[in-house]
Image (tube, rainbow over all chains, first blue to last red):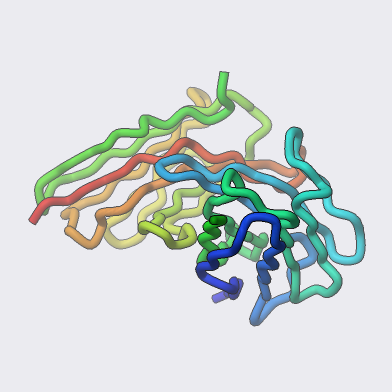
Length: 113
Length: 112
């Protein structure tokens, strides 16, 4: 089936640094990638929708300058958390629409210290 | 009012029990309905996908959709400890730009 490979699975970074998360569609072309954020014991919150070759669409309240999304090819989308702070610590997940439903990456646990 | 309401639980059942998970939604434009299972610190995995009212069965899992009452359910028969996870209902439609709307998730524990 369609697989989205997400890396890294976990990352610890110092406050003020930037972190890049990659999602690759392995056996299909993802024209649209969805980026979610999930806090413990909560559901997924959509952060932004990225389309290949165009600017991402951010949800209300999501800082586009802090969460930079790039979707330069049909198989790769990246989320960069810039100048990370402890409140950015969370579980980040990407997702792409496939023939049946949506497939999700395995998630990235970000801890900012 | 949230577009999708799901009882967050937690739900604890003995092994072998029948589990019923439910969601209601408010947007009649939603066209497709999904159930995802999410293990701790993992991405969600698709269990069931349907776009019509009625029942859809896959092994021990049955998804039920009633568009007239905007109600969706997931039944798990002969529940196993390996079914212990968080279950998320999700729905969407073309008018929402293909974006999914999730329920809060129900945490299920199946005790051996």
